Image (cartoon, rainbow, N blue to C red):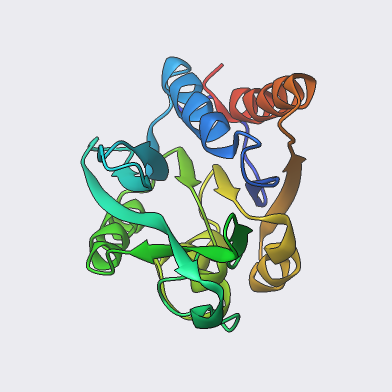
Length: 213
């Protein structure tokens, strides 16, 4: 018998903070803690990837299977070529200035997005106890790209607990996209150690609330 408390609404914890605050680290810790509590975990993690070429690369990992694909890299781009309307290759938060009057923009391997969507589709077919989506960005919220299944999956509810990463500048758009029986918990985090500790504990409390007693 499932001894976890019944919930009228699905709980969605939204981790928000600037780049470098440790949002992905919090997601990875939450996944490990949930598994240690006997909960199944599914979804996506966007992890650092060392390609050995000096660029900042990321890979996306399927939490359930452990499989991953290279997602893209952050590369310098001349300022005059930088389009602030954000092409498909641009990072969720937009270009940022780098030394030498260049901008940094994410260049994605777009063939990875259908694979990531397929991973999320399995979370619909066999819902995990804890769903994690790292992250929901401008592509998903305003461009109709990225992992397109993420926003509808989170908004539909039907899960015990979901955890999503959203940049501060996209929180308003994300909030508008969530409707129905979804109860939002905002977890703000900064790079300061005390903030990270508080955010980790907040997530662990939410996980414990849906774990078997």
